[in-house]
Length: 468
Image (cartoon, rainbow, N blue to C red; front, side):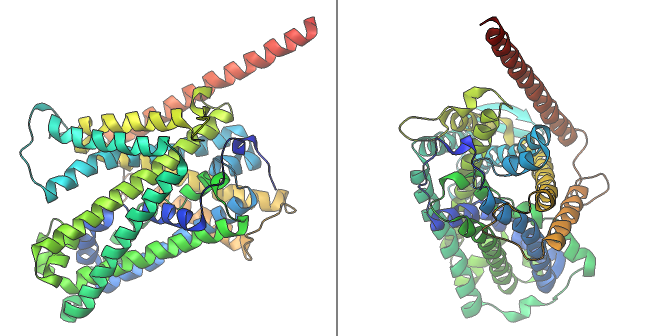
């Protein structure tokens, strides 16, 4: 088994349940609250179910490559570690920088989602208009809600992985309980006639939901980032990745069923928050809509928390591998957390609400490309390492590895194609392409600068050795 110095400062304090809820909480987020009506309206009940089952299977192929590699190399950094071992430092940097972009985009977006959702529960008239960006007026009082949330979650992660994990567990349980309420309400009070039509717009409707699936399931890859902190055998780490993906698929299917039996077509099309409106329709009181939205707030927090954990570990691993400044690899002597990396992500999240909602949507869309590029490189590394290091101990060993690897590569390329011009999820020109380009340039600059510094240090050491 690989033994990397990335692990040296971390303590194995996360249980199997902690890890499962970390991944599941990351995948559930806020999308299920706002998008469920669109899924059912676009594809019909059965069309949406087929899209989620197909999409879940696609993500499982990618998840299986991560599961095997994580069990073989349970080190901080996940994809960075796997790709570096297969292809070297440059490819590993591209992988880590791409995934980090996706994580940063989610962390900053959740800081904007929080005040948006709290406005739904407790509408207030916001004060002190600051500016208008992308047609969105930013108010100081609105932005400060997101900033305060950012400070709270940053502090939680600063003081150790275990407090953050306990917090994650509680809020993930809250989301699952809300889903249980939806299912109970659907069975007890739902109208099966609302399931008609089973299909809307045929294959096109199902595909319109399918293109959203990869982005709803981003989060299982947080597990490899914290592999060095998991108090469980390598085989368990691989299993938890797959179990978390299957659990997320089941969750989304339950939500689709609940919304579909609760609301007829005309209400689905009018609804701004279909899942909340479905709860009101099923239980007959507006208070249930608020309970649902509280579950949505829990989803925002679990996703946000998970990506702070994952993002800070990527930054730490990159710094340890001399890809970015060493400052990011500082570990707190008492709390055993990469505190500088956590504070950096916290600052980005605290600033984000001041950019308004449109700017953050651009960032999330562009960040999705980075994560899928990471998936592609890990999938290729999976096949390469099976060929070049067949003797590597793999506690979670996939039987049909060639088929799995090829499927993961093909699907990753398919997901990347969704972002290209002319596709349903194409990046918006010019803003989203500019954001993607700027992130790539920053990465190129950072890598070049740190490579020069490492070369200079090696040269100085060799000169000193020669003079001695």
